[in-house]
Length: 87
View 1 (spheres, one colour):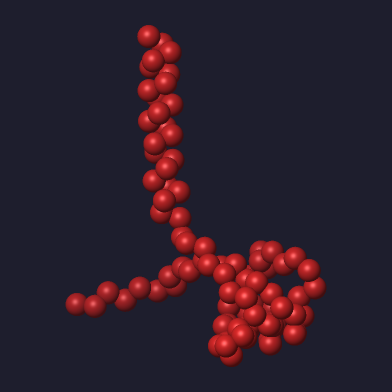
View 2 (cartoon, helix red, strand yellow; view 1 turned 135 degrees about the vertical axis):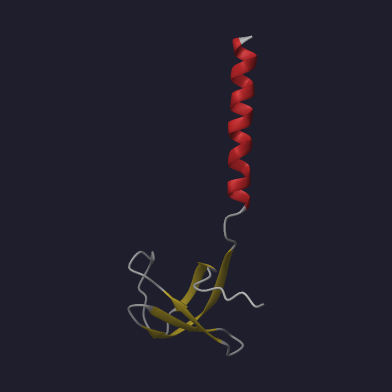
């Protein structure tokens, strides 16, 4: 009986974790050549000429030598900074 109760509790706890993961922000990526670097922003130009300006923080993990002209892949998520509800 105790075993069945323990399994039921474990099942409930595990089922609560799944929805939290389902609501995590999607992850995206963009690949291109670095054309501008700043402390808080990086600008990448894709092959088609489209320029992407992406914010970065001190916590942004950088692997390799990040410099102008380097080919990079940037991984990012989208987050809202402001929401204006229309009436």
